[in-house]
Image 1: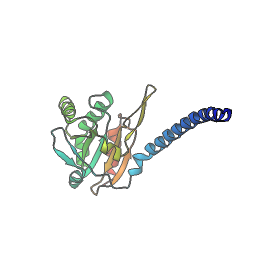
Image 2: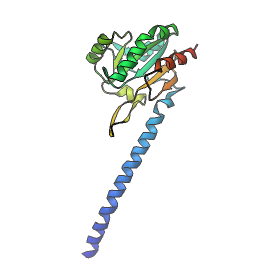
Image 3: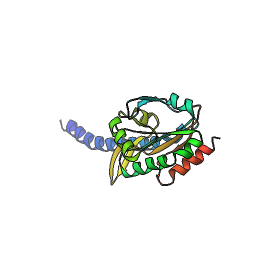
Image 4: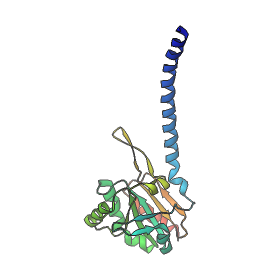
Length: 193
């Protein structure tokens, strides 16, 4: 009897540290995998998708690239300060982007109704697509572990992809800083000419 008690007492302390180590290792692997996510798409075919725009129309990547190059940007949430600044910058520079043969398309996990309000409030002149189940964000490797004020959570990491007419990702901008980002996109589009 004493031997079996000793064994069970020894098993408990060993189990807890192993579980903690495994969780830490899994988290570390997940962070490494997500860091490479967006950039690893460069030079590869962009994952196809079909999502609803603010009016419920179905938009396919294949239809977008049939018209020219695509600036596909993922953002966390409608009406938030950083996302509003980014959207307004694309709005204000849409002429330069279109002169370079590209269209801008934004994607977030928000609903069609939310996109409609966002578009109306800021007079956005390009489509926003609703990825409410985050399938497309995951396919592009932008749904990641994030941290804010010491709290960790899963969410969309602000990322932009420049996709050429053949559907190949020519440039990926992970962890976008909104100030000056549109200039970076315009420069990337110039390289496609």
